[in-house]
Image (cartoon, rainbow, N blue to C red; front, top):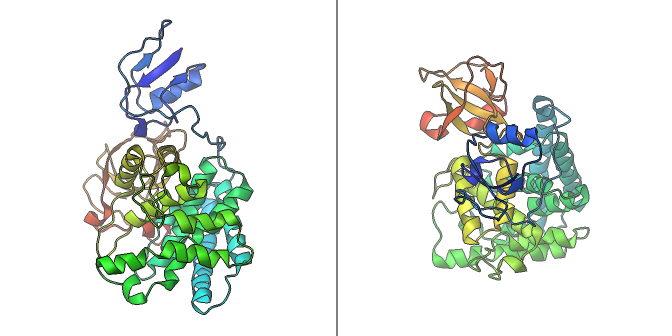
Length: 388
């Protein structure tokens, strides 16, 4: 039977496209698990019912080769992932300081940590990616660069890139903001919105970064593209060259999405962070409008899940919890650490963890809503780091 549409929006579905041929019971089970109760099918004459609520991916949409369980449990890999994160942050600091002092970036160290990021993501796709929720107002540039490197690499893995490509992508994404070392600190650290003149100066950092990397021995040509293209937009409204989607590289398209996602989930003086769930919806809209690559955005949503790690969610039991890890086969049923009971009281550590996909959990629970953690004085990163 050929399914032509589902009765749920695309973003609530674990499928890369809503048109598919049903060949076995496993596919039907997956449809039921994500809440599908009705499907439109093509009849022999090619007719179909009402279209589904979400746009379909075209036939050429990339399909991930990441099927199968992660070889290392989340909690086990988290220990190594923290070490990789700290190492990446230290190397970013050193790299920016080297450029400021007129010295050459240690490309060997950057490549090495990019390789360690890739290895961590292949051991467990959520441990290192979850740490991208770590933020620091005082060291925004370093945290942001590491987070973009992690998110971009995770997205490349979702798209099925080989490890050699992922290392080049990771290295380039880690260094995507290296050009900011050429921007005066009075502008870079300004506690507020830029004037038009300041904005024009800030817009020079992609070209400056690309030029720095071009002069850096050992940097692959493709690793320069994240720095050059991360501020471009597919409709020609970005900078520095106002490129459109067909003109941009695969690494540039990926880094744009990771950059927007991490920036908008971070508190800044001039804007309040939005929830990961809200940003995914926003990215989806940017993909539909052509500002970002629509297929790559959809792969990013598949990669981060409907309820990204670090989200504060309310369960139908009235409890509230932090999403710890994603069930990539049941996107609506992640593992959640319960931090508030049904009476809205904070739970002291150690907080209980519930796998919403486990049928043996009593009572069964499901996610009812996504909440803003700042409204309740909750810092998800503290729970993810095991500091609470």
